[in-house]
Length: 163
Image (cartoon, rainbow, N blue to C red):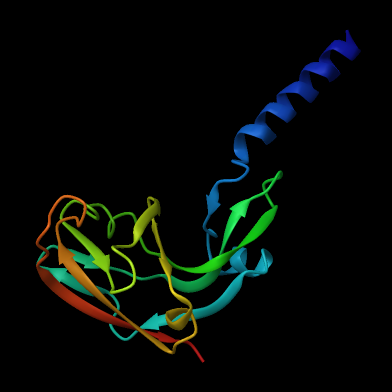
């Protein structure tokens, strides 16, 4: 009976390890510490305005902003396969992002928009020139670029590299 229990536990452990690690899928670090642990962290940014007021009822609170090298998940949950390219990651709050990609989105001239990567975070690819600059400008647009051809800018903000 003990051998059967051990085998069952082993199979369950393998199952959860396999299911929790989407090998080959694009990754985004959960926060700056995670990015540093994965050795892909390139720099932290701050916003001159925080929270960013989008309209009377919507504010965007920026908790952490960083740039990292793009990466994919490896064979284990801590495994990182570095890729060519860079991504901007923003951690916010669930309340701030509740209407994101429905009522408003964030974009710059290098990407269509930042995409939700969890209930509290956004991620978007950026070019190498932007990744190593000291300031990055973003526009807040009404609606979702994927749902409309004409975009109305309803706000702007600037990110500055933390020294």
